[in-house]
Image (tube, rainbow over all chains, first blue to last red; front, side, top):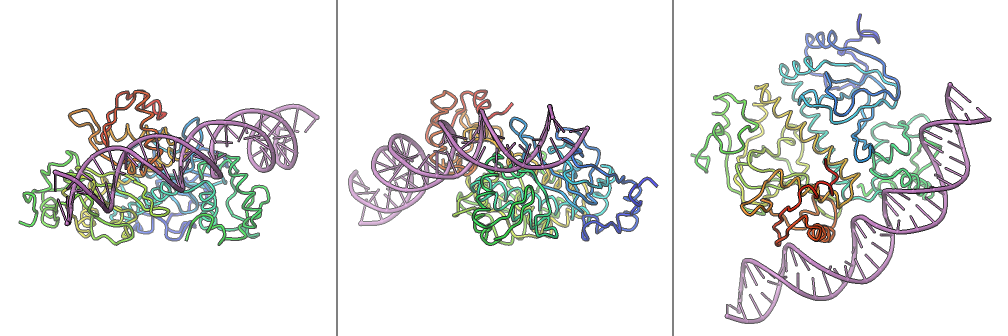
Length: 234
Length: 234
DNA sequence: CGTGTGATTGACGCCTGTCAACGTCTGTGG
DNA sequence: CCACAGACGTTGACAGGCGTCAATCACACG
């Protein structure tokens, strides 16, 4: 009875329907259920830290994790967020390298730890699974390369608008039509790659232009089309 | 006799010693040799184009290929270069997606075309190979994420210095100690993510500071330590 | 109520992109 | 052999986006 939240089998895990483990055999699900280890993580806790060796990957049951790199003067650059159904840390596990990012919980989460040996075993013995995982890595690679182009060519204003659209598309809205995900101004700045003050100024400009409604940390997109235009998205 | 340059088997291909195919069985090498298709490509020719479907990957025997995305107003953002022993286009093949970059020859090259079916077959049937390929994708992912951090946090001056060091480390020097790879100012700008004029000005500043020697397109690094310091590298 | 974190606003100036003009080099065709 | 076109490199002028610094406000928490 080692799997705390209801010793749930991954086979009918509540997280994302088509998750990365969809092509496992019943036996492999069994194995995964035995090997994994699900635990709650509080907001603010570090799942793994850049530069450390990690002994396995984590599958997100719920909550939100921010994945970032630490750059000049300790300024963090947010690479992506992981949520329900996502798997994190597999890059370092499969390459057998030190973690090149830090994973920090920003909304209370339940994570299932999957030992490296289990993951590698599945990768080597199930071609469907390995292809799925490969495709995931390739998808992330494509996204990262697209973001390089963005950040290299677009202005801060364009990038911020784009990030807001992106956050809406990826995390959705709450009951009041506000962005579901709640970030500090500094975190927004660390996605966009700019100063906190610039984010603040631009957000209030967007508000003046009637594109946003702001209530503290909560953000509502009023003019999606205008925002996309500002972002140079088509 | 379909493989033009000496119907060479990949098994003893002259390209990079530990290349991606190092873990194939003799039978698999045989299969690869039968399926592949090696052709010369002239400087300036396009190997594949962003947005098109590609029917296979390419292994670089020699020459240099520039991989870039087209951004705002057609401005190109160079993501990476491929040289001897590198494999390109595998991302789109394995994800079964459209090419998200363009590959253009900048130094006359010989490329071996590997049909998608062959690559996928090898991936599914040889766990060592699939792990190698996965590690390659993960390595590229790590590099892309590192570059996001750089480009988001460093100044143009720092990035240019870093790119020069990077080009030296990856392509080496010619007999006169100049960088082996020859790029236009515009291409340098499209790596760094800046304007051509800025690259020109910064290069001559670096020259004034005694860190570089410039002869047209040829660049010699005189003060590697100073350049690294300028780049904020340790 | 003090402390700390996050948000906001203003002032200031440098880095860097844009525009324009001109120089240089190479290859082509007359 | 020369003229010309076109690509590439260089330089200067200029403005404005955006980062930095500093002060102040808002809010939560022990």
